[in-house]
Structures are given as structure tokens and as C-alpha cells.
Length: 311
Image (cartoon, rainbow, N blue to C red; front, side):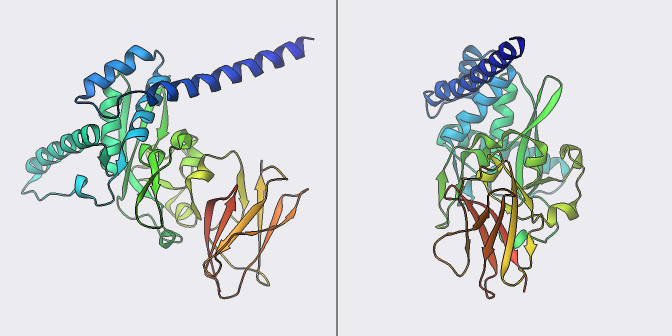
């Protein structure tokens, strides 16, 4: 009886937490699309939410709901400087301009997203940092070492522990036509570091939170947002460059429903093909043309990971 009661309490606790999360999104979704100052938005968030986690989630979701990615890059152009003092002054001026553009005009590059999150989160009373590093977002990066900065993201301290997030990727993605597609993904909010590392490598490895190297990161496949947000794991292959055996590639999953069809598509195919499936072992087999050079795994009709095929 006690075990049953404990199970009921645990289940009710889970349901309440899940509802709280959705409540935050529902409340923030009804906020104005744009505001004239960070203080106005921050006051609204502080009046609606009490916990630091809910405040952070509100900041994340407002930005992700309302700010579109600037594919032109015009809102985050670089600048010339003559000395270190000049660089710092112009950098701060540019950050203010990017934050204002994201807040008022609803458009930003990754820098604008990250700095808006930092400024808004600090204004609601959170401890937050902006992190620079490499985002693995293109198949050409598979097998390549992270080199320099191509992305910014954030970390927030909650209950004396840092939590990672990427509001740029939480807002959507760039489609095959080169246009931004809004697609809210809270899988990038307080992401488990092991998961976050799959497509983020910080310049300062103190913000990595996992025991991984640049070499480890370089060898990873290209993981998409739907995989980051999922509850399953691709156990193998764990390398981004794979060589088919007799034109067959095998994939092993954990925590994936056995009745969930898994498909694949290569650069030589136009439609996903369902993989041959072993329901007991969750091993899936993809038959690929020997001329194919890429393979994308598709789950629930959405791409989740991309591999390069070695000859």
C-alpha cells in the first residue's frame, strides 16, 4: 500500500511539474510581441513568476517565440577598432544595438539572441553568462576540429548550479531554402550537458561540464534539434564518418519505442526509406547505394542525425 501511495505521489508530482512548464509557455505566449524596454518585459516576468527557473524559462520562451533569426547577418555586423579601449567601447555599443534590435524589431543573429537573453535574465534577477564557441550545424564540420567562434549561447545559475541553454536554436532553424523557420524547441532549455555537447563546444572548456575533448567533438555526427529534444539515444555508430559493410549500415538505439519506425535518406534518394528493424535489440539496418555520400536518420518523419559515408 505504501509503495502504491508513493507511486501515486510521484506521478502527481510529475504531472504538476509538466503542467507548470506548459503554464509558463502559455502565459508568455500571450505577452506583447515586442516591447520598448527590457525593464517593461522584466517587470512583467517578475510579477508572473516566482521561481528562478520559471523566470529563466519565461525569458527563454519570450525570445524564442518572438525573435526571428537574421539570415542576412545585418543585425550583427563586425566593426573596426584602433586599440583595445576602442574595441571594448565599440563592442559594448554594438551589443546594446543588437539587444535593442532584437527587443524592438524582433530580429537577431546568434549574438543578438544570446545578449538579449543575458540582459533580460539579469534584469529579472538571474545570474547569467554568455558563452562563445563552436556550433556544429553543417555536415562539412563532421571530422573537423572546432576552430574559433561561430556561435554564442548562455548559462544560468539555478540553486548554485549552472544550466545550459541556446535560445537561438530554441527559436527555430534555417530551412533548405535558406530562410528561417520558427520552430520552438525547449530541448535547448537547461539541456543535459552530455546532450548539449553533441553540437556545442565552448572556447572555454570550463563551460563544457563533460569530460570530452575537441577530438571527441570533431568525430561526432551532425545532430539536429529533434534529436536533442528527444528521450532516446543513438548508441552506435558514435562516429560521424562511417563505412558501410556490404552496403549496409547498422544503427543501435536506447529508449526508443520498438514500434516507432525509423527511416533514412541519402543524398541519392528523394524519400525516406524505413529501416529493417530488430524489435528485441533495437538494431536497425539501412541499405545504401555505394555511390551515396551522406545518410540522415529520420524518426517520426523528422531528421535527427546526419552521417558521412566513407568509400
